[in-house]
Length: 335
Image 1 (cartoon, one colour):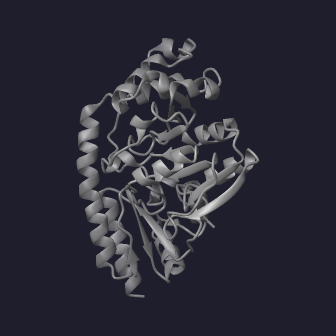
Image 2: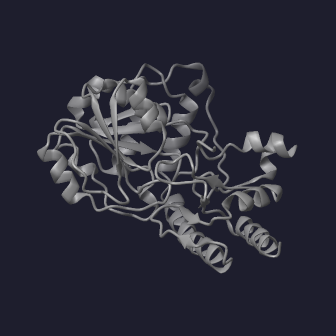
């Protein structure tokens, strides 16, 4: 069972090839990935970083239109999830599933009582008062965006602690609930920067919340490297990157949708508001192995709640990768 995407190193060993030879459709990182040279002054390596990462936080605050005092930075969004879950006192956690599997692991590690809601079939299910709510929006693995205004009001009425993961929200420009963090003090937003800004190797994630909460979840000193902070600050400040990334995403996503549809392999192709597309076929196991033989890796989805391995997820890639995927589909249908 595939628990996460992007495990190209494991499959490269199986195929006896270099990881770079594999087209990784399992990894949902922005397909717009310009080369960027980072000239790091010696002082950035020799000296300790600013413990508050002031320059980076100022850049994030400007980009995401939030108070700089409402930002806590971690060594990746996953680290933020574990730290946040551990800091919350409530025992009952409602996971709107399917969702990123680390939320359940983090809740178990923090000895919470877990309740799962099938958001696809039972979105309006009741939750306990003063419980913890976890909702990923746009969702994973299918990329659905939810208008949460009504649910948000219900959660607030019940005085719930709300964790919203908006790590994929930049791709389609949907409305964020970031502006609510000053009005509702029990709202926490998880933000990954690796997805849209195409820097999975740069381990920085954030929690956005009311500034009074920040003191309770302050991470350890120097938990982010100076090099990572320098890179992310420059990328967030690059307006040309964002414009080009949105244009390329729109074009390449449409191209992938057309290839998936024209293959006539899939019984269902789920409409997505992110940079990946979920599909269903009873021949998923055979297709997965066929694609892997062509050095194409896709995400199997049997590890997600309420899904089986008959569901596969394809991340949006560049035109050359899509062309190779299309050729592999054509050879599969001829078998």
